[in-house]
Image (cartoon, rainbow, N blue to C red; front, side, top):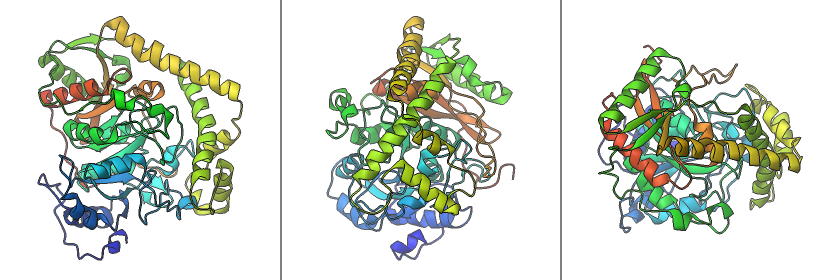
Length: 487
């Protein structure tokens, strides 16, 4: 059991998350109650055995993050004895003894890293029919609002853990939807910053064009506070060259941010056709209008080749970037290429019991650099210059809004995920622009998030808009039931 690392006698705690300040011991007791026992959320993969010692050391650090207890997704490296597995048995011994720069920044701010969260294995890029939240190392993560329904992914454990009160906050990563979808269906705040605002060094990759880490929290203010620590340039990650110049105090002015007079573009076509979801979205729009926002309906149909070309980019960069990461590992043992991972999975049937590795195999065969470069240029143009930027400019709006995702679907290891086609987050993912998901209520007890998207480096303003909406929201935010849906 992961909690035996600390050898603590853990008392049971109530299922309802506490609003009071909590210590490492408090969170460990709660993990024992709802993650290891009870509903068995399976959100936390491993506990940092130095967490209590780190908490004691944090008392010497001044600042608003000092002593805050945070979980990180298990594709992010941290110094110490815990491996970074990306959920795969192929990396179960991947103890690198190095902090990812984003982790080092958190530690410097006094954040206590409690441990690692489960995730969709390989950040959901192995198979076209996977179940979000499943990994060979950690099993299936559950949604605390309905434990038989998906936590989405790939930052599944991070989303589930924050919703369940297993830590003050968590760090997730996103290539396309992996922070915002689990934030939406777990009823929490998730922020995908501009690509290049946060270092990706020592983070298991998919795509250097689209990958980023970001905060998953219970409030927008907490996400902004974490961004103050996370944002910054890293010489080892060229994408972050402008981060020091572009970052700001993301919390400054947040408490007084207003929607009064702000023109907001409404992506109505991306809201789907479910009557209850549409009613919830209309209520969120009414709340924004009551707060003074000027709403502009924008009909938008994304070009189909945008997603097609994005997939080509992800396949090509997965093979290249994964190989580069694996070859950077300090150990001389283990896989060194995507081809090695494919071979490992074939040799270990427990990896392939529920779904295969067709996407890995496609990526290994995607080697045409000219085609890749054309696909990247086109997908970036369609999502950025001719997507978000054009929509903002032509309609004279500051942000775009839509529901983030539909209600959580039933977990289905046999048939995989059942995405319902709600939301427009792929625009921000492909363009590398900021995307914030804020809870806007629930459909039949299943949380739904509101997406707020802006242009490149517009992170602070997007967070301000989210905080202003959060204050204007009149719908009730659901509390986790820790039961099966409908019980």
